[in-house]
Length: 364
Image 1 (cartoon, rainbow, N blue to C red):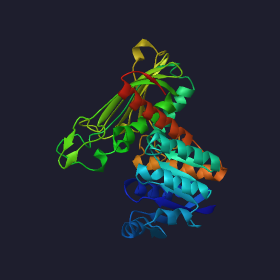
Image 2: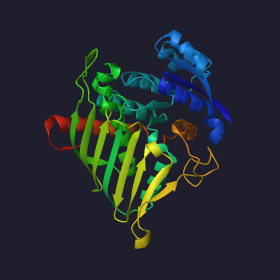
Image 3: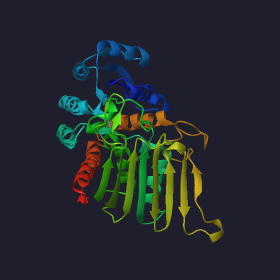
Image 4: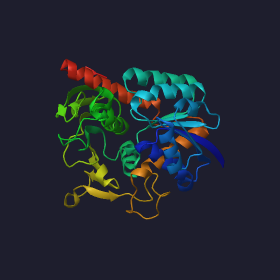
């Protein structure tokens, strides 16, 4: 075993999740590389010191450049706002340091393209933080599809719906301005990534993007509340995707339904330890969806718990992500999803805006 110094840019919601993951991934997965929380960077020295004390970092700084350039920081996790991703990643790659960047890859298609090119020029390990597709249930769904259990895919329906801005009386904030902070920049990338992982490349789309609550106390809303798109996958499968931050009652509506020529799969993130499988070749009296509870037989479950049905949680997704990142660093080869995979998501998002503006189908 050997230590590796981890620097995390951003100490808020996702910064904390990554710090916790790096603190315990070695014990959970018995990784060869054992993370050392070397430094955390925030927008000020005071907030960085607060995160240092709370999460157990060795040091802190109010300047992310100091973190990236520090020789004891051997790998960088970017958990700051989208508009900062590109500059931080490019600086880290220039120094040959592996990067795990939270989604979306950048604040624009230009950012995502430049970041991917910088990653591939450097030859350094890179990864994007799409955590929901890493649940044992969704990993198993991908396995079932690869093994042909439900046959050729003919239909996909996916959504990422939440209700944190469903109340029109909630005041305007940073989430309600700038395109990158809207639903297409915040929630949509997760399910687009899920669609690409489960079904394959999206060839063309027809999208509609809109704002439900255009004005809020304290300001005007300048980005999107919800969006939908019809899509055609490269393998011929048809689909529909829906995203919303104003969907009353939905707290973590990362949901997909997949129909194949031999069966179907259903999943709901609010019940993340269950996968529903329908196999068409069973006897008529037994036909119907079967609920599969995740357990030690499913990917990345056993290191957390020996009991089937006991379940994993949100933080465990980030720990699995940390394990994948460390294994990639050890092998010197990027694992899925790389920056190239993150760019694929950004291309779909960009195509959706073009389709909405043109009012027609567009090629991705």
